[in-house]
Length: 217
Image 1 (cartoon, rainbow, N blue to C red):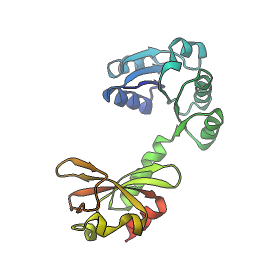
Image 2 (image 1 turned 60 degrees about the horizontal axis):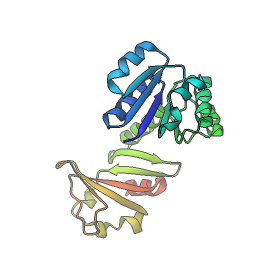
Image 3 (image 1 turned 90 degrees about the horizontal axis):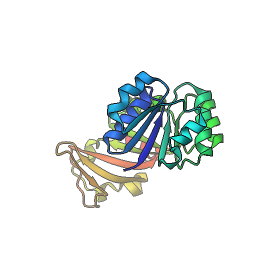
């Protein structure tokens, strides 16, 4: 269990705080709007009304002791950047900040934020992938050049072993896991003798270029 603080409880921040709490983490929710704080109280460990732009207030909340701090202040670029700067100066170990634009992301990167996210863009990219490729079940980008794809096996994969398919040598992709959607089971790092079934989803890691080649076969 980790100690995680979420600053800013718009739609993204609220759902992040709630999801982390449901996963068993200790979650501190910080928001300047008192009504929003009232709504989140049952979905986090502790909720406080505070202006996160106040560095002394953050320090008083013991923010430096948290494992992760998520900053989600929407389009408030100035506030988001200032809060990120305070967190760096207070020595927070990991800062994840939602960016509203490329310029905003550049500022956050200069400050030294550990991870910058674009939730709307990432959701749109995942949806676009799933709509344009019928075999793609889900998609997780890993930096600029690599991804993890959940791929429904093409007909020619079904009934063949991973050794027969030779995905690593032929397509330069690695099978991380196989998910059986009928049995609701996940098998991690399956062996070369694993025979692919129609009811299974392949979880693949590779470069975007390699995965694209595989999807075109």
